Length: 305
Ligand code: MG
Ligand code: MG
Ligand code: MG
Image (cartoon, rainbow, N blue to C red):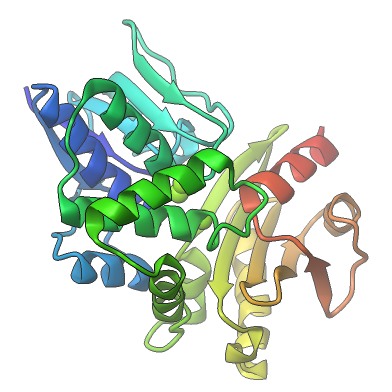
């Protein structure tokens, strides 16, 4: 049976490129796999695929009866709804340990680094599997994206080392220039509704029985968000909260200013603002906050306990 290599819902660049790069890794070891994704590429990922001449993975929403390798997550909430009817074979991830489980031993590569592709690079080296030039370029982009050009507090020396080595394989001379081009593509807000923008990179978390949804948009400048769009984000978050969530949050990250604007609709707004060291107001700026995984989710999980 061909096993699936599958990233999380609302796929980001790391999730989609991990499916492709981990497929290269498993195939290089003689394992029969196919890269798939739980959605089509967002603009940033589309830029990376086009730049390195790669095809987007086929979209799947059901995995019942299939064998599956997970990349870039291990949470049931981010897996297909029928994931419990699939057989888990492995996980490569850099997030907090999630709640998937298995009936048989599982190959796990989990590291607290800035990007799943950093781990995938290390495992290629471990098994002596070669990385094609175009996949190396896309993996480099995933690292630049997840670490926000190495500026995120999630970034480690291992991420920088992997990026350097991938840049050499891909023949990329100026990593930061490539990363800026990618973030410009990501900052394109045209042609999408406010709701689509919120869900472009959105994750639901179970926080002590409360469903908290957190979206993040990383932009080269917050000036790209007009007053009208800001107002639409706020009303849309209210609607998203009312779809069965305790809270709906949007983190608007300014990559150059190195901080984020917090927007929220919540039954427990003050718990959230207190956890993030701010107070409820029309303009909640969180200086230095760039990482949902490290600077938002753990703080909220602790506050909701
Ligand atoms: Mg991801
Ligand atoms: Mg990632
Ligand atoms: Mg991200």
